[in-house]
Image 1 (tube, helix red, strand yellow):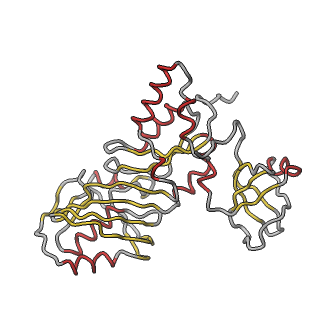
Image 2: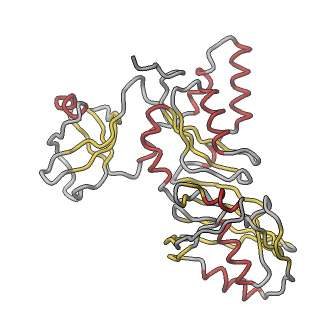
Image 3: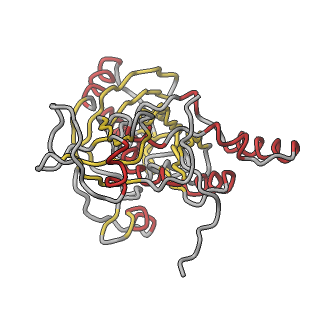
Length: 321
């Protein structure tokens, strides 16, 4: 007999404002416990040093976490110039110190190098895997392994300020971009070295910064619920964003109620679709006049809507405040 998962069936996305010094997995497990959720998953880890937006998917929302992992991100980063570390951030050991001697023009020229489409070699202190092991495990043992450069896109790189030896930048980039590597490479271009001393993720996809909550705020709400002798879900669940916000950019295909049962059984169905829709393009599927989100699918070569990932409906979807 299959074991019933612990926790309640609750679906949605929490925009956690992760604090510094904790792992993303630790933060995830705390959120899962506060909401008493049966399932939870995050959408791309932040280093312990980093703070900021960490979307946590609960319940059926975990089925769409990959699409947030693939989304663009925005960061505010402060780099300390004049010192290079082995991890490219302040958690590492200083391996080289050099004088800071560059002009404003040289700085702006160097920054421009990173804008647009470029190639980046990931840091050895990253979670990318080589022969089944994360790179950082090799790095901690002093082993350097081959790493292939990967294409990245920096949509915006804005100079915020330079105070003494601290340079602050705002970076909007594609998935898989390592800000520590940009900072390290920039330091080498400037001839002085650099490493990250502050990193804050300010945006994932189009999620609003103002909707973020901290673990301390969640803990306070749980304590308040206990004082009022009410279930914590009464105060916590309004913080949830609907799980279809993870695929909000996908075109919508609405399925009439009459044929919805066939779709929900995994069958491809024929429905009116936008003529601009491409074969195999991922779409967001909704049902009936209330346009209830039930998953994602594609239009196949026969012109049928084929479900790819459907949710199990346990409760009403969270409402956006």
